[in-house]
Image (cartoon, rainbow, N blue to C red; front, side, top):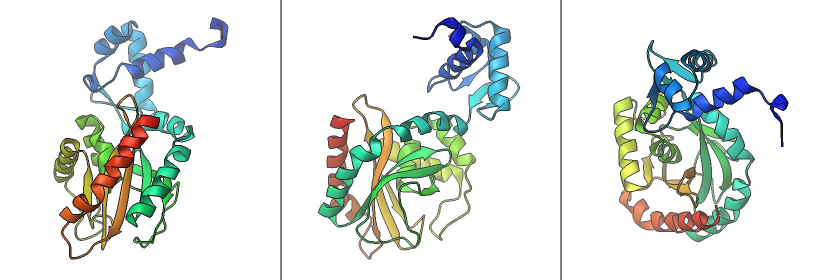
Length: 251
């Protein structure tokens, strides 16, 4: 166990300031942070201004809010966990069962990062593999992951995203995208119809651990056909939810 001479008190104070933000307290003043952490106002102010200077917090002159950059602090640790090894056999089995490619990803800023993938056939013009990135706002896994965030944080991610249309079906208005995210939050899955690439549809569900936290997203993608998008829900959502339930028991 480290003694006090081996630790950095100012760094510990900064971590306490970061931890003072949450879903119910996403906008905090210096006084709010001082009260939440027990730090004096001068120390709280220096910590907050340091976070602002390093890009981890926005500041409007009175209130501080965390930026999506803070997600990187947790994403590196999450990516180092054995999540890819845990989910890969499930993906392989699911892909074999439904005959479609399946993937698991996490959120990093305005993008999703693929952690694991089982490919049945290529339906996108670009090859996807672990480490591949796509915009979060227009992908099924991205919307599932954004739906797991507090609404102000999700909106901030959207507003920081490049919303240039990728296809004629792409949503480009932040309010429209947030409305879709609200639907995902309510129904528990996301459905994308040719917003990422023409001719591609996908459906995703959150990957939830035993504590009830969303740690990743799981999806399958297929070529768009004359069938309605409702057929994706009927044909693939039950299989995705079965894997979702199985992973919750082991994560």
